[in-house]
Length: 338
Ligand code: UT7
Image (tube, rainbow, N blue to C red; front, side, top):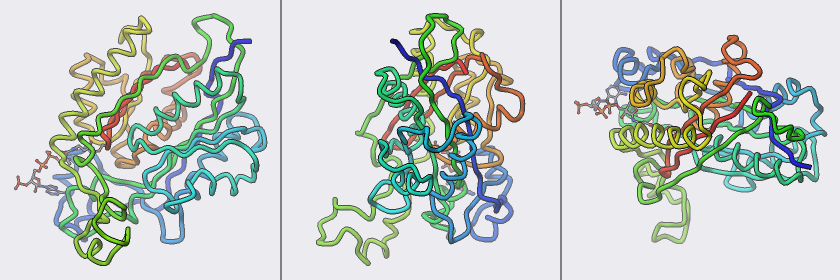
């Protein structure tokens, strides 16, 4: 029997505390006008101290599983994408698994940063098509707020990021051969590690001439805060997102007109506007959430998917185009029929 993977349930969770640009003015040497004009962000959500990444993931997962009309115990694999795990090891997928009370199933943690959700979607699609798994829970979840430099020195990075989680259930369906069948149609995954230090978190880590992966010197130098060459990331993001999505559409003989909705990674509204300009995508076909949530990295696309469903912008049978770009550099695109 041949199987395809259909997204049968979507969920998301944003921690209740909203942090506006005006709130950040009090911490960083920044202002609402700069942030809105350069990024499109108005506010983001940050967790309280007692909340972990797997806590956010749990809430999003419960909603996705409920919307799929199944029980936790019907899930036979978890794929967890995050760059901000609960702990260095084991992966946050195992902590989520324990919270969901689904022992003995396959759990796979992946990184891939802002492209994490699309990498996970492609992996899930392959596992489904082998017939080995029936219901895969794919989660993207991040807590950035605990890792940001909240002093004026960190302003270029710290205004951009928010906390949140998004989840989808991908279920195996017998392939009918009908082109209108709901399914993950195609994904393309890319990386270029020669740009790894353009957006990265140096410490803690083993690539230091030190007998400790976490030293006081490292912290004194601020190596535990993310570093970014924003302008270079911006230029490559526009180029690569447009390139990979154009290739994926062409490979599947789809034109812009055939796509009902575009869900792009949410790093900067200007990146998405440029991609739209290059690809000649009408603005009303792109669903952005960055204004409310900032950049939630691996969680941006599933959060956007859930908001689009709730807003009536994403309905069953629609064709969706997706693209993401981020640290690594990694980038990816995908097309699905919802
Ligand atoms: O998910 C993937 C990861 N990230 C991205 O995709 C981010 C890609 N990059 C970007 O989105 C943009 O490069 C940023 C939003 C990060 C920065 O925008 P920009 O237009 O490239 O600004 P810039 O870095 O060229 O800085 C312009 C000015 C500088 O001042 P001077 O040198 O012109 O006097 C900065 O010091 O803005 C200053 N600046 C700020 N001012 C107020 C930098 N950050 C801030 C801030 N508030 N938060």
